[in-house]
Every structure is written in structure tokens, then in C-alpha cells.
Length: 251
Image (tube, rainbow, N blue to C red; front, side):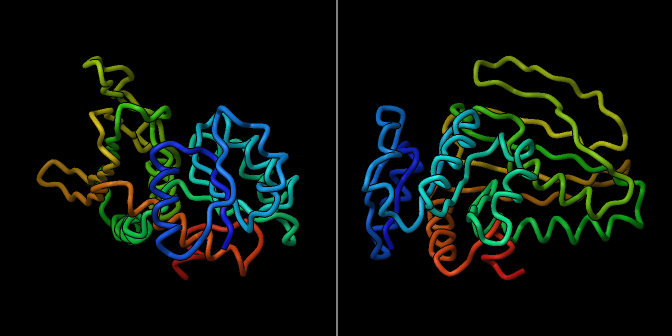
């Protein structure tokens, strides 16, 4: 499989390492210094592009890849909430292919299903309120994380007493805390922490006056995310449309 990398930071390098170890080739690397390479023969020769950039760049990158006739795997967060309907329309009937996920970790995919099942169980126990805390490295630009938003939506879809989510507090890398603990009781509050080089931890907690139930997923490094992205790229070779982890994991 011939892969184009869009974004060549920490994740891009790790994806490259894993892709090469699985027998694939990297035909093009596009970063902030060479955006003109979207028009190159090397880019157009790719079977799939793997895109990990910033929220402000991701949408434009995907559109450029579509115009070149390239399938895309994207793990950039902070933009899909506004563009999801458009992406679905662009991928309708296999016209384009986008495999998007807020998190490519296989463990997070499994964790998400546990989260949904627990939310369904909690419908019968209104004394428990639920909140989410996400912890990431200091370089992450969006808060809350895309994964936290996806987890919140999984709860909303399965827990009748929750209808939305809202931003809570943000513990910043410089020690300051912004945001608020005030939120509508029908919302799931998502608190964010930015600390060191933490790859990513997500905590879902159901709290009552007498006890609490907590489930946690914590990434130990970026390799799990990179492997999932490469597996997603392999999956897109034989599939079209708007795809996600549920498709890859056959849930």
C-alpha cells in the first residue's frame, strides 16, 4: 500500500514507522513547509492519505485529498462536529472515502463500547450523576478532546437523563485553571487537564452520595494510535464512504 502522510509531527513519524514495519511505503510527506506537494505526482500516486494535523487545517487537507482522488484516514479533532454532515454528503455512494475517528486506539474503541453499555445500565439508577475528565499533553490545542466528546455522545445516546455536554474546567499547563463547574443538570460536564507529555487518559465517573463507579482508559504511548491509523488505512483499500472505528472493529 502506498501512503501519503499529511502532518509529519510526532504522530506522523510513528505512523511512518509502523507502516514501514507492515510492508507499506511512504510516497509523500506533507507538512507546513511544503503544502504545494498536494499537487505533486507523488501525492496523487498514493492509495490513501493519513492525516494528523490541527483543527484549523484538517478540513482543507481532506478536501484537497478528495480533489486528487485520494482516500483519507484522518485523526484530527476539533473540526468534525461542524463538518460531519458535509463529509457524509461528500462520501455518499462512495464518491469519496473518509475514515475519521477521534481516537484510533483499539483499546479506546473497546472502552467506548463499555461506556455505552454502562450508560444503558445507569438508566435505572438516577441517583448517579456522570462526568468525564480527559488528560492530555501540553501541546494539544483543543479542549475538551475529540475522544471525550465522542464518549459523551455515547452516554447521551444511551442515558435518557442526559441530553448534551458542556465544557467544565481546564487545568492549564501553567498551573492556571479556567472554565467553570457550573452546568445544566442534563449536560455531561467534561473537565480537561493539560500535563507534561501525557498521550491521553479518559475517565468516566458515575458519582452518588454513597459511592462512585469509575472506568478509565489510559494510553501509554502513541504507538497504539498509530497502529490503529495504519489498520484503518488498510481497511479503506477495500471499502468506500464515510467510515469509522465501528466499521474496522466490526461492532
